[in-house]
Image 1: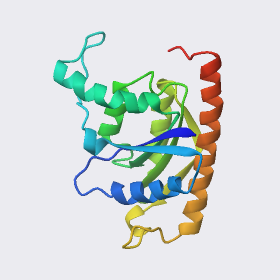
Image 2 (image 1 turned 90 degrees about the vertical axis):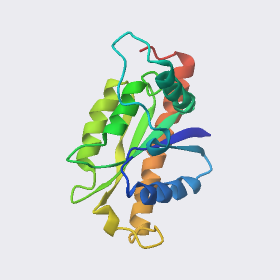
Image 3 (image 1 turned 30 degrees about the vertical axis):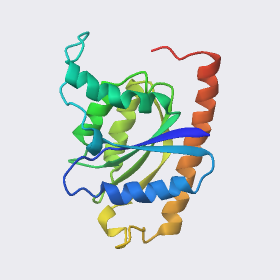
Image 4 (image 1 turned 120 degrees about the vertical axis):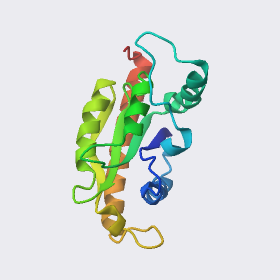
Length: 193
């Protein structure tokens, strides 16, 4: 079993993220090779101010950060569900990436994005660069919902269910393949960062 953590990047009030999150969780639920955990950044609210380089955070801050660490560390792979805000990704998502390092390293990251005309693609392109810096392995295939709020019905099902379900399957196939390969590699030789 691959331990997949899906990270929900939006913390905005009235966000569309729960619709996409729930749809993607149903796609993951169709698989028998994935153990799934959903880490919604709106629920954990990581502090946005990091300590000075080399310094330890204040105890209350450390407690919030340490509560999330085991979930990320246990993961074999990640999928990030993100909107696009002003041609980029949410600040809460960058904060979550910055608080951790080894937890992301030598693990695959896939993306499900949504937004206006761009469908979150610009956010994902930037996220790929950021994740490479923490030694994660972004996978090529992704799912994107252009004008996402128009792509789902009132029950949270996408209008083009077969097409986007197929894209989700490909994404998950790639993430699982990379998770297995990198898990084996880390077991043979720990990845040092």
